Amino acid sequence: MAFHSRDGIRFYQFEMLSARHAVFTRHGGISPKPWGSLNVGGTVGDDLERVKKNRRLSFQALGRAPESIFDVWQIHSADVVHARAPRPEHESLRQADIILTDQSNVTLFMRFADCVPILAHDPRKGVIGIAHSGWMGTIRDVAGSMVSAMKKEYNSNSADIVACVGPSIGPDHYEIGADVILQVMQKFGDDSDLVLNSINGKIHFDLWKTNEILLQRAGVGKIEVAGLCTACHTEDWFSHRAEKARTGRFGALIAL
Ligand SMILES: [Zn+2]
Image (tube, rainbow, N blue to C red; front, side):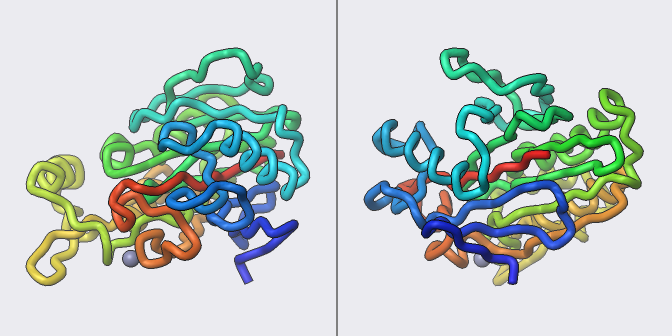
């Protein structure tokens, strides 16, 4: 079973990923609706003290010190930050959508509500990464950029890397408009057929398949896709689209 529960905190774990990690559901926190209850997003209208408490509870459930956090201001880029140490609390967040570290005292942390979490581990070189890949990040090849950065900075061989695609909006729920369709076609050319599906006359973008293809192209040795749609399962996940933006953010963490 991929779901686990500790102190009321319910979280998802991948089979293939041996680094300590979790993708947290919305269960086990203290926030009221529409952030009920484990909201870790600080920019969605929830009280910041509750958000902090929820983040602390999440870290504690995985046995990680809350002070070990390294997080970023996620901006739908393909920019990378290397975490050499935990982020000092007073320091402002750097803008990026990929974080990597080889430091065991650092916990990488990001926030999601439909966008794709990608967690990566190179057990041979002792490197971990986390990435945020919505449609923009996917078109910008966040997945490939993460692998390139692991190779460049830490000498990883892509075949050693285990990469996992977390709960996020599924192909069934992700209808896109003309502007995004055009960008997908420009980026993927003939392969657009693999990632765009026509459902009831509307075009849907398959973020899971696309990120899997991008990871394959980058040479990643092992890939696991959770296949859990956040919009189908708002009982477990925050979904920006299904809940019409009145919702929170769930967290994902990874540590060595
Ligand atoms: Zn769905």
